[in-house]
Length: 198
Length: 198
Image (cartoon, each protein chain N blue to C red):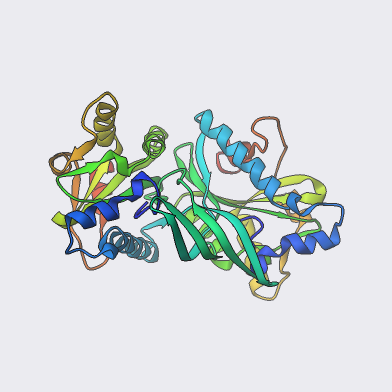
């Protein structure tokens, strides 16, 4: 989930703004999300994959009905997502991933919820394709990191190790996704490379 | 999506209430949804499948920040879902379905959006498992109807045929799911029967 509006995993925007005053807040995450959504649209239209972003979960508290057919939500709160943001089907297989933006020199684990990592691990156990897509904004680079490469760092972090994954680790163990015209982020090529080796 | 609050597919509640004054509105759909969510929880905990309901899509218009870490949505509207409500992975395969409640003698196509049917058809084309789960409230019965059995009726309806699927059609072409203690709606048994014939 990108630009989560409350709680720890959502503070990216503010923190990074402070460090990089030249970047507008709207650049943080949303344009990556937009590029991903356009890429998914491309994959859908070309019958390559069916992958959608899940809606942001909202707890609705109060709804007004200004007219019989109209419902206006007047009090609601963002909820913690129970899974990841993106899932669908590719090459006949279940695919599931989380997309995040951050700044080098590292991707902090605080941008992910523990249950999201557990979810991705369970997906992989069941035979699905599970990974992270990480945008390093200041490097203008996007990496795919397969869940098994994530898990080892994550377990280290739980037992007192560093609480983030260095950019160098992505360079070594991730797959760089070069931006393109269409789809804008051709991440399924990286999926092919990581999960369907020739 | 169950009990959609605006537009045509959401009027189920009201229409059925009029026809069946003995049933409380909360019974319509939500308890079916609750039973499905509990079943999915059971399947998850027993490592049988990872299937989640997608959040209801909401268009957020205005957010207040009563404090730095708190975001309160004060204006938002329900959006039309772009896909179906449930998806995930089962037996290593992508699974995708829509769940609806209705009353016999028939299930009206107006409870589904056309793009949801297209979505299910595309999922099946890509090798995924795609179906409907229909609760007939007055019969206290739930049926699984595979997408191919749905499509033929649907295409007839588009070319002037009847705008609903008769209950008898579900009895003949669907699979009856008997309620149980845990999971409450053991629909994956019906999935086995429909999609993994021995």
